[in-house]
Image (cartoon, rainbow, N blue to C red; front, side):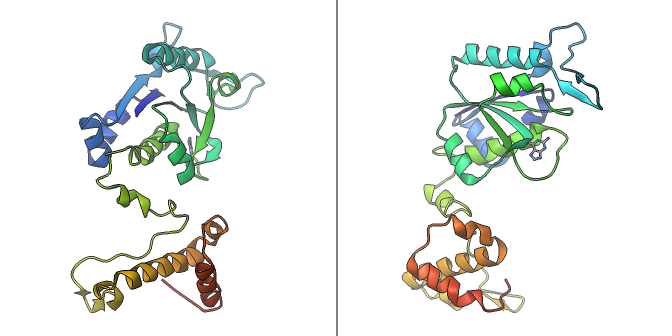
Amino acid sequence: MNFHVLTIFPSMFDEAFQEGVVGKALGRGLITLNAHDLRSFAQDHHRSVDDYTFGGGPGMLMSPGPLFAGVEHIKESYEIQDSPVVLLTPQGKTLNQVDIEQFSTKSDLILICGRYEGVDDRVRQELVTHEVSIGDYVLSGGELASMVLIDAVSRLVHGVVGSIESTQDDSFTTGLLQFPQYTRPAEFRGHKVPDILVSGHHSEIAKWRRREALRRTLIRRPDLLDYADLTTEDREFIDSISDETLSI
Ligand code: 6GU
């Protein structure tokens, strides 16, 4: 998986991915990350990448010239004419794990980091295949958002996360939030790990985890239950606790 980023702050990416799972994946060559300086595709001596908006109004817009030149350069040099071109913008579709799984099937992703008040709409119309937001709040630019996407997609690239199972139980992959987990000690400051988890009864543990995932999802994110893959037993359990007063 190769990430190609167009940004006015390429050095932000060098810093961000030196550590952790993604840093290790870069080191092992499982993924590559090329942060291209948008200013190097500017078409004037001032290296401008933004301009005033037609029709007036505050703020500056990212000009089409450098973005078109940058994306065309990336597509030609890596021979990736048909790769997705993702614009990170608060106007985009809010990312979810299904989107991340779909992006993880691609060999190359071109990511455009929006800055200023936005981008000239012809970029969106002619160049961009996906517009993506990471949530309902406003960042000063798309760089952090594209790092979020890169991190989430990289975890799903084969070999990046130790075992496939580690990603299969993730919150959202199953359509549910994750069940509570514990490690040693079995008792900490008077709080014990639930008996069932130290019982060694694997089928009972699996059942407990499923129920706790359902309970947590019902309380925190009931909207997710509309899309989750639920068995009759799951639905019976949800009905049985729906009326109770619960806290986690
Ligand atoms: Cl992708 N960009 C910006 N600037 N703000 C955001 C965002 C993206 N997603 C949420 N807020």
